Image (cartoon, rainbow, N blue to C red; front, side):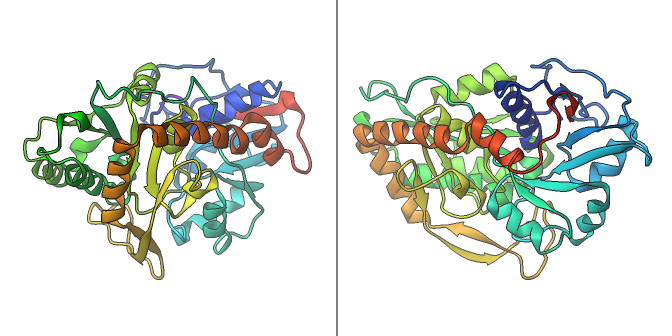
Length: 364
């Protein structure tokens, strides 16, 4: 989904860029139009699938889309392609019907050990952990003069479950940490940037009610072009994510790569790259999945996390009151991403055993 602003789209673009950075020559084939999800202009050269009888095809589309994707790409049963499903999931077990789709793939790539553990209980095929490539950009955040308001940013895609992303908790944490009575030296603003929020009007009303007309709070419902998305991250001081579960957390890794202080729930796929030294991990308790938005159906014994509210409030206050600590976390964050999610790490994860010829790699 190269022209899609969701997590799979970002992951596909990261795969392409990682292979290029390591000296390979992948071909990028876009599926966004096929699935009516093209909402971005192309930011890398796109091509069409060659009709060779063999090669390696990496598909960044989840199991429900696999058959349609393969048919749309023109692959046939007699083709001898190595087909890799680069699949994403966010809970401790995938939907049971996903297992049937493994017959179309040679192996599955999971972006984190958390996702690999989820898949391993249901899938009878090779599963490889391939954390996303996240390039480090810019210098660590050094805005410590206090003249501008502290900007706290929360990001989500409503189609990926607002209950899972939990922005309402983030908004309440912000208001508790920075009540209007706080001194002018601790001014702060909160931005919730979301895609597809309008599709869930009940949750949107809940957010508006929680904001209570607070002028420091902005809610943006739109898909931003890549330069604008980058500018939004660059302008933030703190990324706040009291999520209930993440398969990986691309936006958290991208923020850390830009030298931002990230506060997030200390559970699930974001632990692939987050640590207490390079971020603030919130304590939590586990409970059954309940998603009124309907994105995730109840499935025993699947659980997710509830971040500790008071810990989130305290983390925000601590970073606001201690710019030097923010600077230390920012620097450690970039170092962690460079060490854990660099292009060489990506290459090693992909080619840890038998490597296909570089010219035959296709990402879709």
